[in-house]
Length: 351
Image (cartoon, rainbow, N blue to C red):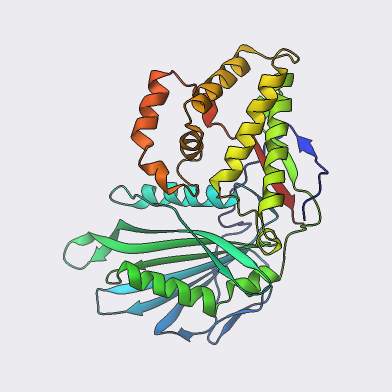
């Protein structure tokens, strides 16, 4: 479990690992089953009515892989399933959120229409581990080759799922011309079971006997109050995770999509400020930050604030209902944009 042995740095690291590439992607020529040697995951040539189309390597050691399967319903209609598996050098409590948001940005750049991706949350378990994940069902418009018109926009039913599986990331991407959301979910479940996400997570679990380290944003060091209050918030989050997480959860990731941990950390940060606001140096920016946070807390809008701050990628279903009213509240009370900044991350170095 967690121990209180904290290290912090004024270097804010925000690493979004999509495809840890150190070379151009290479399509491997594989005629039979392909085994990912690092996790012993087998990708057969034929599986569940799908034919394996590509085995793509993103590094020289074939750790970082993307394997695509295709099922053709007709000449024009098909379903494409792509499985990504790649190692992580470090994992932090924002990793899952960062990857989801990065994918959302990327797909909107490549889609003909705006893509709305509602984050949903799930868990798969066995007697040893729990693997938490984030997923979304969405529609996106892609351009495909057309014999008569050159290209044509095609709307796809799609699914993305990203799993917090220890020292590995496992990601499922599906796009289909015909599948319903129910069929996409069924295919997701078959994929995570057959390719055994839980076994992949078991190959490299987190060092849970050690406390996670703390990384502070450079802006935090502007004065003593901001530094000390942010550390209080980080320590409070560690306490909350220690007291509210099963060992099976924290062996595979931070499982930090629960809004309650953020509420607890925010409350402890405010308590520290109120008790010490006359004891430590603070700039006008820090004073404004805490004045705004107190206004939010006094109006019982802390959860709405956290939902907004995390760009809706946190487990708080009620947040969408109050999105517009909270935006009006921020405008009316002149809430500073600085409250949207992530001031710290908890992380493990896995190397």
